[in-house]
Amino acid sequence: MRTANTILLRLNQKKTKLCLMETRTLILSKTLSCLFCVFCFVAYVSASLSFNFYAASCPTAEFLIRNTVRSSSSDDPSIPGKLLRLVFHDCFVEGCDASLMLQGNNTEQTDPGNRSVGGYSVIESAKRVLELFCPGTVSCADIIALAARDAVEIAGGPMIPIPTGRKDGMVSVASNVRPNIVDTSFTMDEMVKIFSAKGLSLFDLVVLSGAHTIGEAHCNTFRDRFQEDSMGKLIDKTIDNSYANELKKQCPSSDMASVTVNIDPETSMVFDNQYYKNLVVHKGLFQSDSVLLNDDSTRKFVEDFANDQELFFESWDQSFMKLTSVGVKTGDEGEIRRICGATNA
Image (cartoon, rainbow, N blue to C red; front, side, top):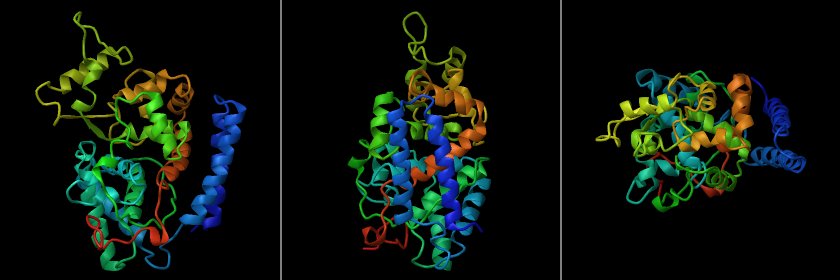
């Protein structure tokens, strides 16, 4: 197995490559800022989390989690997309601390934005297995991060190392959800504001939006995209006409809240760069997708990823690690829950 130092060296090399890419569209001062942030981020991750954190306390932890995700995905091919969405909604509210798993009145799960989030049962299943082999050792927060990582690989994406050692949080409040998650109708400025607050860059925004290469969405989350004016023409000019017509057929006006469609109309079960190819031909499902092509600050990134899947995968490696390190709790800041749906208190 690779040592932690070897992995960190590899990550630093890749980060340098990605920052060089950003210089194509960013001015020199922003590039220098990017390099500084990369250095600070690597130092932060090294100090608070670590690779192979469970090597001594639960050496089979990652293997057991991966097996659970693989088994669940075999039974239900939609699981990878659900787990990927779950990690976003968990990490963006209270940090990556499994606060989304907590059940009860007025918890994050009760917010309308989280009611369609799935994958909880996979996390609970992995936790039950881990409690048999390594009781009180592996946090639900780490399970969520590792399960999402494994979901990407199972769906055909890159297998990447991520550090572990997260603790589970003690707070989960519904009112914290809306101010911290991206809505599908957001403008570029609104998305940048949310991502920046999490320590994620404009580049990370484009890369992590690539998660939409798998998964499904309810029709009521994008119905405004195929609305027509009195002349029968699309009001939204940023979406392909034929694609909009196909969405109208799949989304009956009487049942938009329960009907779902594939976010990626081409390779919905495969983690690849098709999402960016779709954007280039104006087939982004959400307004928040289409804006990535229409905005001058992100168009070049979209085009590069559409033309180079390897570049997207390498970029995903770094941005996903940053995502799963947002607001992590370590040491006395949290606990290791016995079950993911409730605190130990």
